[in-house]
Length: 97
Image: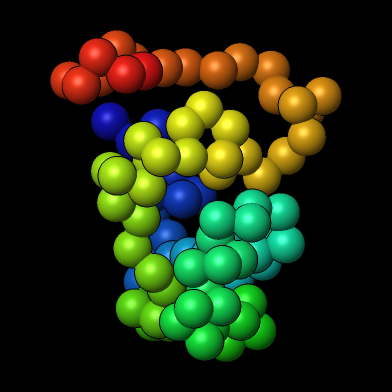
């Protein structure tokens, strides 16, 4: 069953274009709003304008589970709390949410 034909049936070329557009937007948002990601990208010498397509994803830093734990709960937040509607968490295997 096809839920969203426009997305699920698009050509590889259109999919790559859409992925590229979305990656560029996400990287810019993270760089401008999340100090953690700005620091990681600066350390690698990567700026948002260096990301021009989905092929450039390999230029971006990895985020590890330790990064997620260290920055929990709001260290990776890219929007003000007034824009947050819901927060999900798990108990995690370490006992730290």
